[in-house]
Image (cartoon, rainbow, N blue to C red):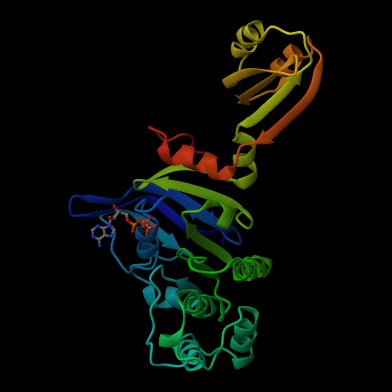
Length: 310
Ligand SMILES: Nc1ncnc2c1ncn2[C@@H]1O[C@H](COP(=O)(O)OP(=O)(O)OP(=O)(O)O)[C@@H](O)[C@H]1O
């Protein structure tokens, strides 16, 4: 099966509130799919619909080739799910809780639980109620990964984890992909998913804004350019000449040490800018890719959906 998740015009209204508005997308088997959006965008709503924890008001979803409404029991066995608000009985010890959950999933070797707990630095003897938020999140991660499910559905999996544990989590995701598991993970922070995701979807107000590979997104991001020119040079003339070049925006020219420093953003081919600069003596040149996080914020804040590919 080439498609692990398929959404077709999926909608969910909560009374007059819009949770999800006609969302269509496909997650391929074996890929790591990042599902991004600001708070309230509809990420948890989508995930709850996939698991049949809530019912759609329109459209349809297929998960591992099945209808979540008709095959919830079969499906849940093949899915590892980490809820955004993961809660378990606080009186239990971590090890007891994970063994119990393992039994519900057809049995998980204790060595597998021990290995995951060691890697995530989690004490299996601790009582769950005594754990910090981050350590509870580790319990949630272990129960999602431990039975090697075909599909991992993780709602804000890195929430509360310190940077070192986040790295271990990313390793677990890579290993899962390595053995053919599919990972669907939500986040509201791009940097958490860009290191592992094959593709990312960005949603806003229940709608798909963009769907693309991380590499394509990077290529689409603007360049922040700084060119230093040797003097004597007329900054006003420089400004007039460069401001009209294709793809140039946010241009600024400042006088410096007898010469001038030009800064601008560049969208598209650098060729016209480079050719214009070649008419002068260039003593310095910098071009940095816009931070992907900034790019995401521009998608979140855009008036209209920006781009939807594949
Ligand atoms: N049970 C509910 N009753 C009413 N409105 C709801 C309910 N659940 C979600 N919503 C609304 O649906 C929209 C999408 O919420 P959802 O929780 O899916 O977003 P999210 O992207 O997961 O955000 P967050 O990161 O804050 O969890 C929001 O406007 C939210 O207020």
